[in-house]
Image (cartoon, rainbow, N blue to C red):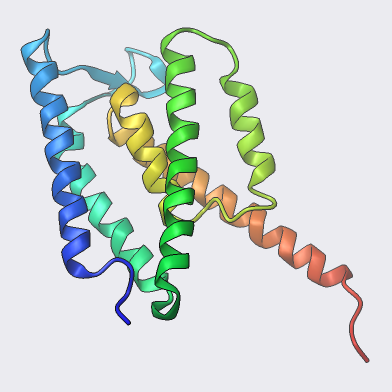
Length: 177
């Protein structure tokens, strides 16, 4: 059996992501200019224009799809694809909710992020499909660079939380004699 994300499907998904990001950039350019996002939302700090996302997002998408491809099991293609899609959609949903709340000034983003940290103890939120969904969901509001950087940092923290939880559980689990 072939793997879930073969070379052709990875290239197709990357091309679709590239077309979407450059279409968004063209729309921004024609409707007032390409926005610049500032670190920590402070204009005194360096700004990151959204056009950087047109360069970085396709590379990042292909990189994450390659990581997912290497990790998937070729004997469980339907099951693996279902899990990948659900994880991607979960990351996408959280990012869209946070983006909408941020855009409309709804003050619940702290609670949503707190729930993500709590879920990281139970679920492997550090996986590439969650990160890819996060970046796609937040890229419309924040550009691509900020979600890539912030999401990568979150994945590192989520990895530590998840693995430390397993280590502690394994330490207290009774050993068979």
